[in-house]
Image (cartoon, rainbow, N blue to C red; front, side):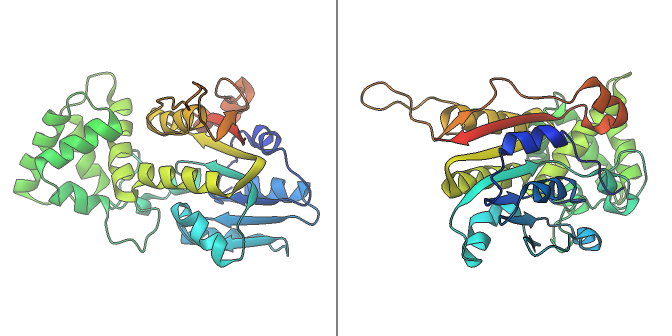
Length: 297
């Protein structure tokens, strides 16, 4: 199994699929969500995006399906190129797939040794190794504070600077040993996860890409169309929640002359939807998932 789709039924219900509609799955992965969407379509169309070249071994053969191997931040450009100027719904299952985590050569896992890569798109030139060995101390502090919410980011960055002055840090295991020097005892795994998350976000420009995706999707959605997003950490979820609520990423309400709030979307559910106890037991990597659904006004 390449990846077990998270909150599958909840996502499909959230999309409120019209059989003749146009839908986009911007994180194709193993195709689990896409296959379920296609089951609901008759004359409709599904377009899927994914950067990972490995998904090509798992593509759906269906005349209603189109796969585009590109970053979802360019959603609007590539759909316009296909002659599509509106959509009925968009699904995004953010983060990295189970298969990617379990491949040592990708560098995503804190459990297995491998090269410091962490690229979603392996044709991208910037790797985790480049960042860890070439960024200045202030840049590293910014990444760890902003993307990992690391309280002792200055201390961690100092250890990295000292280590790479002796020799380049080339593997995930070498990096782990540096990180563990400053991790709180008893919370090493959580600390490692946040540090790796911070580097991965920087390598792939994940938060910038998410912002562009949301804005572009809002432009493309027809009235009544749905945006369905699963996030796995607070940084992603905060951006999604704020935009769904206020129409901007800062979460600051904007009002018109009459004092009415101006927002292009309305949240379908007041709170984020989380996996059931049963799903979390069968798929432990779903535990941190939060699903938010919004409808275009």
